[in-house]
Structures are given as structure tokens and as C-alpha cells.
Image (cartoon, rainbow, N blue to C red):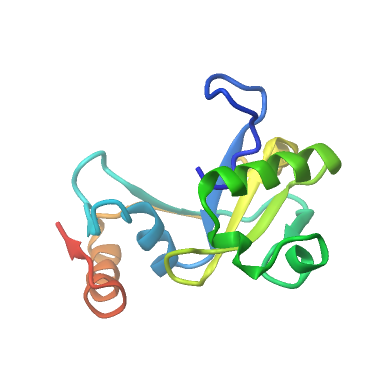
Length: 154
């Protein structure tokens, strides 16, 4: 993925990464970007919300930090190898950083990228978790698919 801090080559690593969006539209756009079809059936996707157990220490890449550090705002949409190189350098410089606050390349909404130091911030149980096929979520996803994303939905 775009902000994975693991150095190449790909394979097992002690560094984990988790991607989360801050709104349902961005969640759906990011998750189903390759097909542009929101698939509520295959693999039984869930919509899950949670609150971290402590405040997160995130580097905000949506502001001027990239510019002040030799890049530009376009960094968040740079090719994946470029973003990974930056993620590796950031992770090496600030090893206790929980992760990044980044803009979605799909919607412009916000994504949270969590690295290994944030592993202990997941609660024992989520605040909310339902299958995407749940009638209420399906209704929301249908509106988002047709009005916001112009994605198909099954």
C-alpha cells in the first residue's frame, strides 16, 4: 500500500500497518477503488468504527509539513514507491510515531495510517461493526455509490 513503512523486498516484517478512513464515503471509495463496484456480498465486508484507547501521535501530511521537509502537498498522491520511501524515512526518524494523517487520493477525505506503535490503541471491542449488507448500511452505500462515487453496487 501507499504508506507501508516496511523496507523492500516485500515479505514478512515486524512492522505492521493499518489503514482507516474517517468517513463512509472515503472508506467505500478506497476499499473498492480497483473495481469501482461496491461488493456487499463477496468476502462479507464489514463496516467497523472504533475509538483509540489513547490519543494518537500522527504526523499530519495534509498541511505544510511535506513542503517544509523537501516535498510538496502532491506527496500524498505521489507514486507508491515514493510514498513508501517517505514512510520508511519518517518511521526511522520517529520510531514511536503512531502513524500518519493523510488525504485520500480517491475522495480528498482523510485517512489514518497506523503503524506498529499504535497496536495497543485498539479497544477490546469496536464501537460499531455491521456487515455492509445490513439494510441500513446497504441503503447508505447505495446512495454514496450513485450520488458521490458513481460506483456500481452489488
